[in-house]
Length: 390
Image (cartoon, rainbow, N blue to C red; front, side):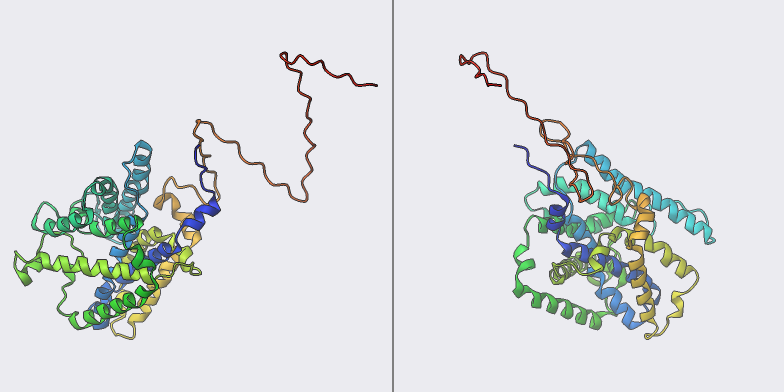
């Protein structure tokens, strides 16, 4: 028997709102991080930039891994993947070129060298293609961490086609996929783990405050060959910095997921479904603000919160339904609008099932009762048909 596909209410009920909320929090922190990059000379902003690093890209990669499948894609799934990732990459690369030219810059085209922020799309394409093969390994998460540590020793893995970052951040993506398979399910659901998760976040942020001047910002992107890491521990121990970052990011990302409520949070959970809109669109606004020197006006600690508040407001606006409806053809090409026509599922016999009859309301006309005809007597039945009187 072919299982009946879940209805929309059932599918909505099975979706965990926690992940949508976490996606919006991570996307908003990405906007905040890009907004305060020009004022990182302030101690408070430098601390905020470093302390929230595990809650930005590591969490986004973890959420993407949670919603990814390890099945080898067929032709239809491959087309969907290219439409969902490769097409937006090309469209937004061209949009970055146009904006830079309109702001007085020269013509700069992006393909192998990704535009600002678009490296994540190329990395996501690599992660989803590599996931079925990594999942077939015996210890995929451990091997991905080893690859992330070793890739820094090879000059061939650099910023071109974001090769280095795709490998370096792959463990976070795999961690999200393993959580979907049941990994850390007890930790993420046990009430006793809530307080330790909050304590880990607070202790890590306190440690970053004391070490903010010793932590080099060039360590965080992991975009190329070991450079500044080697100056601290030497070439042989350069992997220690990246290993610490992977541990730091993975632990705090999981702690954040644990602290996010599993129930729907008004407004925030709904905005979380537009996390990719926030990530791809905010860069144009931040670049425009930098071009006009707006972020340079916040050169005191009590002026920086204005920049942070503006970044949060921008994230809310970009994830709003009107903006998503306007930009959906560019961010999610091929995705039908909510409420649009969807293809009917096929049954196991290859036939398209008939749509259910609409429920009659109080103003609908009653349909006539069906007419049932008596079945004709079978030829094998020797009994004569009873005759009725007039």
